[in-house]
Length: 231
Image (cartoon, rainbow, N blue to C red; front, side, top):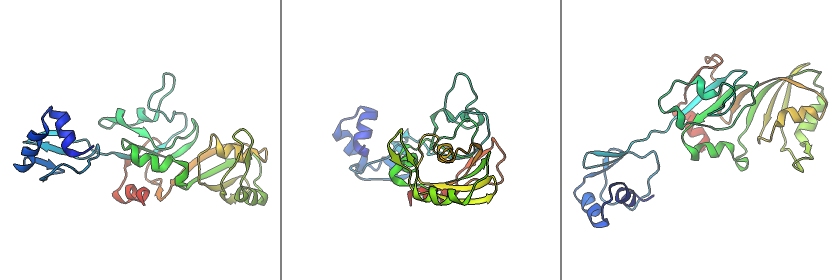
C-alpha cells in the first residue's frame, strides 16, 4: 500500500490533511522524515505520525532443530507442534517455511514474513535442500544414477528433478533435492523398495543447521542467512 493511503485509512484523515502532515515533516518512515507518501510500504515498515506509532511490526526469522515426535504445524489438537517448542513474543504470528514429517528431524525455518517464505517453498525457485538419510537396506551405486536422472511418480504423473546422492556408508547417504513433493525422499528410495528409517535435514539453500543447536532448540537467523534467500 502507498504510505499516504495507509495513513489515510489508519487515521481516517482526508488526503489534504495527510499532505499537510508530510509538509510539516510529521511523518517518519523507519525513523526518517519523508515529504511525500507515494512510495509503497511493506508490513514491516515502521510508520510514525506526529509522534504516534501506526505500525512497528518487526520481521522474525528463526532456525529450529526439529526433534522427532512433533508436528510441523502451528496448531494441532493431538500432538505437540514445533510452535510449542518456541518461547518467543508473538509466536502465534509465525508460520513454517517448508515442513518436515512427524519423525523427520533437523533444520526448520519459521517466520512471519510471507514474501520471504514463498521464495523458499515455491517449486520454481528450486532452492536446494540437503538431507542425511538412513535406510533399512543397502544403498548401491545404482541409486546415484537413478536419482540423477529423476524418478517418475505415477500419482502426480511427473518425474522428479535431478537429485544429488552421495553414499556415505552401506545404509546412509547425503541427498540434495530441488523440490518438495509429498514424502518425496521416502518415495524415491521406495523405487528400490528400500525403507527410509531416519531422515535429517541439514540445509536449505545457504542456510545450514547450526551444530550448536540441540534437538528442540532454536535461534534467530543472521542477516547473512536471511539475505541468502533473497539472492
